[in-house]
Amino acid sequence: MEYQKILNQIEKEFSETKLSGKVASYIPELAKVPPDKFGMHLYDREAQHYCFGDSNERFSIQSISKVFTLALAMKVVGDDLWNRIDVEPSGDPFNSLSQLENEGGIPRNPFINAGALVVADVLVTHFSNPKAALLTFLHEITGDQTICYDDTVAASEESKGYRNYALANYLKSFGNIENDVEEVLDFYFHQCSLAMSCKELAQAFIIFVNEGTTLESDREILTAQQVKRINALMQTCGFYDEAGEFSFEVGLPGKSGVGGGIVAVHPNRYSVAVWSPPLNPKGNSALGMAALERLTALTGFSIF
Ligand code: DON
Image 1: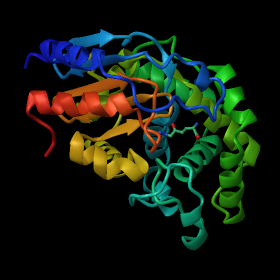
Image 2 (image 1 turned 60 degrees about the vertical axis):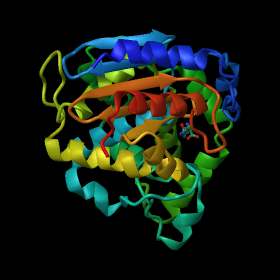
Image 3 (image 1 turned 45 degrees about the vertical axis):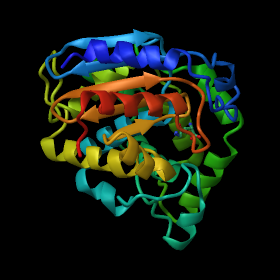
Image 4 (image 1 turned 90 degrees about the horizontal axis):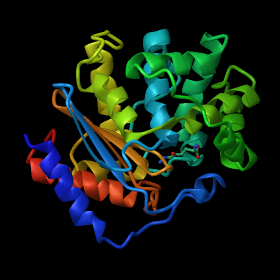
């Protein structure tokens, strides 16, 4: 497959597109990111790299980090995790509180904020230094020791994190947060602040393409069953109330973040990351979704 030709065509097609969407502004630091950044990186199972644009520039991965924390929590606590979080699509915005009320404080899935906060709580319980443990995990799967948190972004989100404070306290009232709410939120804001490029994200997500094993170092990070489950959750819940639309248009498991990044995987073929900061009304990168739709259309294959 001539991936580079296809990426060049996507870059060309969108170079004259008028940007729709708005850069996230509820986290003040994110509002400063130039809206015209655009990059894409595809990493295939033969360890070949294909890219264009700003694919090497680091940006705030935000909710994409929920895939990494979920993977780490599944490794350390196994199936006990599912006593505290469900695996159903929510059909609601990522930061919604409403379903918790009637569902006994059990979040619908690990990718909405409520679920990600429970995952964060699990890691805070399990590790004496959860922030260091998450970085070690990322360094292991990417082979890059320089990936780190952006403390300015974390502090910026904390200063306006009213919704997440409400969610964490509400979960705690149901007994579904074990630790101090402040400690869980501090970890959560830091995981969201992780700065990575499209290239680094595509490299990290290759474990979801390659049955849990890294390509270059050939290390088994996750079991095939864990990968199957995480990919299923990305497919059904990775885009919140736009998960149906993403499946319909792109047809790959994936995860978005309000920094404008999206990562998607084609099991057994490739991982791909795209970055364009302006978001559609559901909080997902408008151009990113369109570019990935073109990728599966031009290659002629998706998982469906
Ligand atoms: O919790 C928040 O609001 C952000 N740190 C992350 C939200 C996010 O990326 C949602 N995904 N599209």
